[in-house]
Image (cartoon, rainbow, N blue to C red):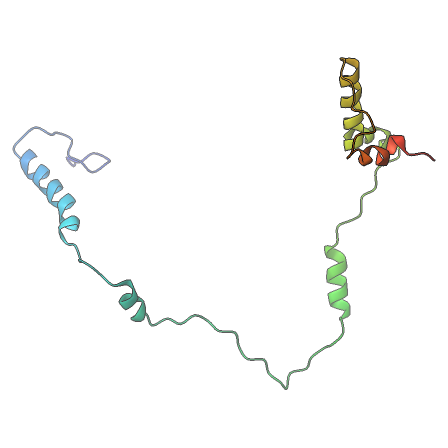
Amino acid sequence: MSSFSQKGSPRCQAGPGREEVAAARQQRMTLPFAMSLGHVDPEALRARLISVAPSQAQRNPDALVFTHTTKAQERRRAGQRPVPLEILPVLKKYQDHKQPEFTHRQNRDRLIQSGWKPPSPSLAGVEWMDMAPDRQSS
């Protein structure tokens, strides 16, 4: 059976080999820091690179070119379109409460009931009140 645990350190820290293990661990930790390369110019390193960025291949002028949309392209585009969804007539009456006008109307009614007085329509900048759907004359 070995004297090392699962993590690789000696099981027993007491004994004659304890100082050697501590010295080896200290040397491993200081060795990479002692081997500093000094100042390295990143541009000089970049100039030594051999790899080149890929470039796009030139188009062959003799290749056959289709100027119109092919049937396969039309089928692919038709398959990618999302199916238009319509609100079910049964649920349409419940969709009204999600509209901003409905929320605005409810908040306004709640404020009026609590004692808030709306500004007079003679003030400038209230043209939007005439455009509200509940105030339009039909």
